[in-house]
Image (cartoon, rainbow, N blue to C red; front, top):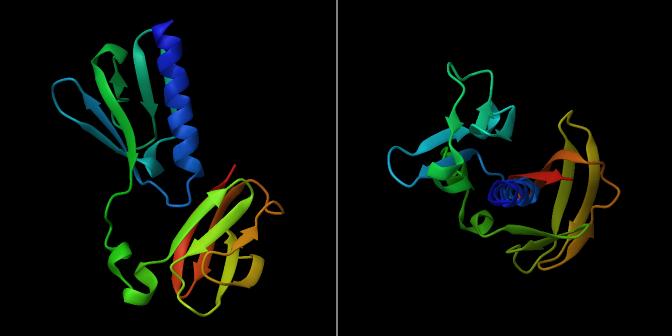
Length: 161
């Protein structure tokens, strides 16, 4: 019962983490004692659970990490600093995007409208419009997948599920 509950919690955390507008880049596993495990999301192919514990499967791991469920204190997805976030100016550093249902809301744009462009990973423009601060745009026409949002020379990764 405890293992099923733990699996359900992990699944919920993963679902929420990947659906946020701001992308996490690292999985951090904190045990009750010992060394913290840090894994790049890009290197993880899948995470599975069985009687031996949580398996983190990826092609870049020389040995597949297996964590016994009883030793795990915390699992979280974090955004690591890669230096890219520091590029910009005071005008664009305050831009925030939030998702509620099929709507994307833009805050921190200032007093003037800004052009928003959404691209798929092939570079095709999926949506182009202008928004004011606090205004939302409908994203229900986008298929499930990963998109790049560009607004005021700032880019964001967006995952629609």
